[in-house]
Image 1 (tube, rainbow, N blue to C red):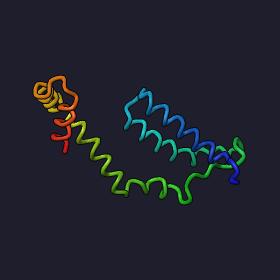
Image 2: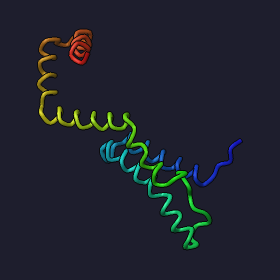
Image 3: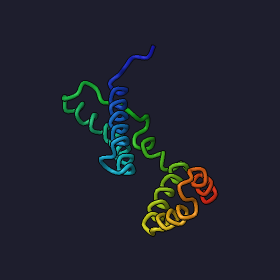
Image 4: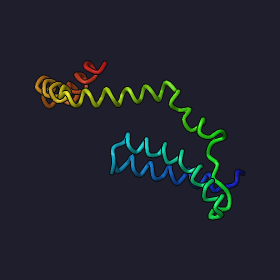
Length: 125
């Protein structure tokens, strides 16, 4: 059985806070996601500074080769795809085309949920 280390507890706490922020949205979701990443990047150097000052028993090590491992996610195509989707969705929302399209679909479909579903699937693909 794996021992519960302070490193594991810190990551677990960050995940719990992130889940609470994602569920309640006190700040936008993208700000929460960036905040989680930044907090995970800052925990290791902060704990090393506290350990060298004698305020912490041992530093919390989250990455094998800091900061290379911490920033390696930016090289992933999935990360760039999600970023592009955030940018596209914000742009489409600001143009007002979503509201216009919704109004057109609702006049066409009326109150029928089946027709609304069919129209949405037809438009989205």
